[in-house]
Structure formats: C-alpha cells, structure tokens
Image 1: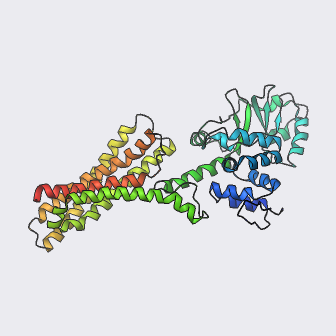
Image 2: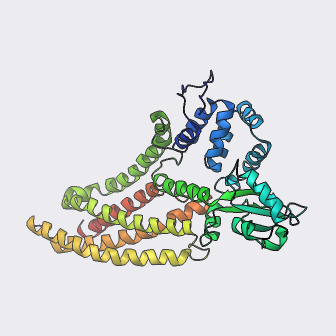
Image 3: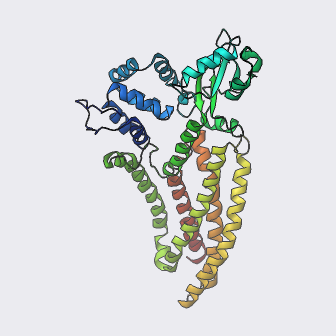
Length: 414
C-alpha cells in the first residue's frame, strides 16, 4: 500500500489505493484518461501499476505521456523493464511485440540442474517463474526446461540434456490474430518471443494475448456504428461526444441520400399512398439481410477464413442467400400487400403484391452483396473493415429497398 501524489498539472486527486486496484481501474479507462491517472502517481507507484496491466495497455499509456514524465518513469524502473518498454514501442499495435515482458530465468546449456535450481529459488522470491529458457552464447533460444524436469533431474546434469529442444516461439512483428491461431492448440501459460536470428527478446503471457484479443473483439461492435475502441463506460461525456458525433453527422448525410431517393418518386408516393406502409418493411428486411452478411464477413476476416481469391465465392453466396431469403419473405410481404390493398378496394392489389415480391428479392440480393463488399472494400483501401461498416450498409440497404419498390411501382402504375 502506498499513497498517491498529485502533480500540479493533473486534475485528479486520488485517495490512497493499492497498485492492484489502480491497475484494474486503468484497464477500464481509455488511453487518455489512463495516462492522466498514471501521470498523477508517484514514480514508484506508477511503475508498479504499469507492470500489473496488460503490456499493450502500458505501451499505449507510456506513448501518451509527455516526454519528460516518460523519462522520469524510465529512470525509476529497473533497467530490464525500461529496455523492454522501449523495445515494445517499436512494434505496431495489435502485434506480439506490444505484449512482451522482459525475459527471465535465462540459463546457458552448460549450467547444471543444481545451479539452475538455486537461481530459480532466488528468482521466485521476486517473480513468478514458469519455465527456464536456455540460450547459447549469442543469446539465441535453444531450449526450454519445465519446472517438473528441473525438479526430477539429477543435480549434476547439464540443462542441455534435459531441455526441450527446438522450442516453439513467436515473432514480435506477428499480428496478434495470427499468433492466436498458432497457439490455439498449445495452451502454454507463457511464450518466448525471438527475433529473426532466434535471439530471445521477450516473453508473452497467454493470458495477455487473450485479454488483448478480447478487447479488440469487444470493440468491433462499437466500431461498426462509429464508437471509438478507446471509449469505455468511465469515459467523460465530452470525449464520448467527440468520438461519436462525427459519425452521426456522416450517418445523417447518408440518410439524406435515402431521402433523396424517396423524393425522386414523390409523385408515385402521393398517388399510391399504400406504398408508404411497406417502405419500412422492405428497409427492415433488406437491412437485416445485409447485417447478416456483414457479420459473417467480419467473422471470416477475424478468424482468417477469408483467404485471397475467395471473395468472389463469398459474394456469389450472399447474392444467392439474398435471392432465396428475399423470395421467401417477399411472398409473405406480398400477401400482406394484397390483403391491405384489397381492404382499401385498390384495383391494383395483385399488381402491387407482385411489385412487393420482386422489390423484396432485389433489395435483399443487393443488401447481401453489400454486406460482403463493404468490409472487403474497406480492407482494400487500408481501413479497418469494422469501422462504420453498418453506417454505409444502412445507406445501401435503404436506397436499394426504397428505390426498388418505388421504381417498380412507377414503372408499372404511373
């Protein structure tokens, strides 16, 4: 337990709390708010807290601090930790390198079981040791020794005789999603990270990888409607407004496009008012069709199932599903149109029903294809496929459904 201190330029006034509670609070905040909180802590407590959070979060917080404050924290940290933080910041977000911790329990192949056991007993007084890592004179990883093997082996044996050779390791530049696939069936508590020469440069905990991936997955739903992935429940309203409002303006602009389509067919709507009853029906069904296609496409991208060259198959599949689903719900909607039109003694009841069926089929096909093409297009231009996808999809589905229904009605009845 250590009391916090307040910096003159920091708005936070913190009551005495322990490092574990602060670390838990920080992981619920966006990067800016977390950096402000850390900026108000004493150097020792700030370093302690940063060591307890996910290394990727710590890297983002350090990058958000001003240079002077960051230098203070580096000077207050152990040399190995400072070196690791500096190295981690060289790698891009969502990569293994951002999650690395300093390598520990490193031994030479010639070290004996007895000497390694003594060293490990001292290490566990300060840190949790899972494996012993065996490196050669050039610091290249050549083997791993489990605690069980260390305990049951003869004391005089060198580690080279009991170590697991050719150990599995991760590369720092590997995207997190690719790394998750490679460790899916391994379930190790910790993974070594080596550079292109095989030099051990860090360790990554399996828990940290799954935590970071969980954060990314949880952010996808928000990204689809313009909610920044940094926004959390504790984010101040002013920052939430800054994150969200620009996307709402974009959504309003795209809504005007859909409204313009209705405006083009204003005369048709004036004479066939019954069509206004079915505009939201078509918009809702085509919108759901597009969202289904979008969800499957994003899931395929996330899991790595969408390989290069399979895009055409995906689009054809979604067009087919759109046609079949549109036909099935179109028949139901057509029956509804016939009943309503007949109750109003409309002489074009049957014709309007057929228009609804055809419009439903066409709009669902377009929506399904759009749900696949929009994330593919965003990825092609280098943007996040999940970012605001639903905003563009909503525009596509509204324009398609309203345009199909009013256009066909105009063609056949005006």
